[in-house]
Image (cartoon, rainbow, N blue to C red; front, side):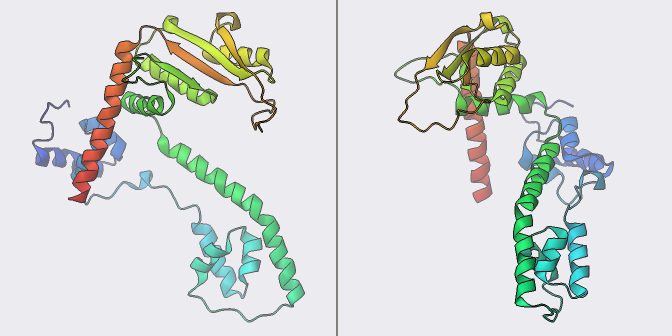
Length: 290
């Protein structure tokens, strides 16, 4: 269902369709794509008062821990004992059981110290597990990206990391440099979306002389799918012994520059899209303030 410039003019009819799709069990993303409504404010209004289907709700990973903590507290366990048993923080335990009666103290100061020590020792592992759980949940929440979402993400990424045109020095061309292989891979995916032929790309490694230049060239060439001989001459940075560099480990491979030939028009599209994002956010913020 495509919409014209006044695509939200018949709001009530669009809301009827949105509600019907919601009650049929579709997610916000599915409804958005089905009705071609890419304005979050409009989508919120269309679905106002309609609860999301159960399948879209992620369970709270700490529900079971909370129930178990309350059970142990009712059995007379202390915060320290519960922390060691469940591996969760005392602050969380306090929130979960603060309405329950406090147990009588039944241990010596030495026993309390030993329990606290075990809790401290378990803290780093617990925090690492929580860190990984949060990252995994966030990764899964992203799901599949539409071409439009990839385009907008690429525009924001380029504006943050890419070379930009200046009023005093016109450089309307795409030139991107980064040390993160995932960022480079995403940038190449973005260029594919813009129908940029790989023959128009040039690559150059930039790295400190103290690193393994040959290994770095082979790594980056493999990542972008070219032979090392196809890379432009590597820029080798002289090592300054007076500086304290952190990126000296074996995994250090320097940075890769990606140049796009004949890309003035693409640069203008990117810059225009970026300011389109800025204006859209500004207008949405202004609407929320009024």
